[in-house]
Image (cartoon, rainbow, N blue to C red; front, top):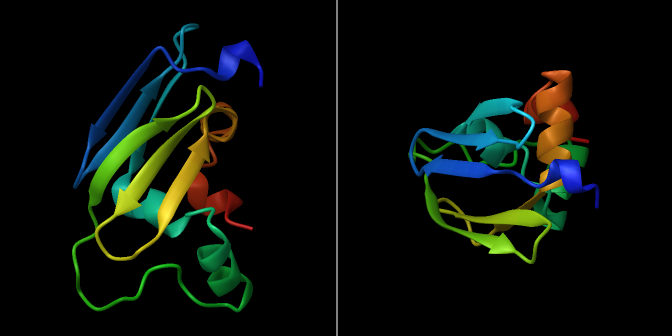
Length: 108
């Protein structure tokens, strides 16, 4: 893991957004639903590979139920709509920020 990828600040609004700020001043803000759609877990990746959405579209509001650091390399998020736990590495989040691509551009 590159030391530059470790955030200086993480702000999670459970129903709105994730804001990450790195020590060099780079920052990025992602919509909660966008992050959920990009869930990197095996089940969600499989659904996307089959041409399906990672979220079942039943009108349920997507929210982060819980968020925790995973070691010193990632942020884990538990979602309200599934028994899925997403682990977003800090390196991946930084790459999305640097390339301004966002998670929906890097789902596969």
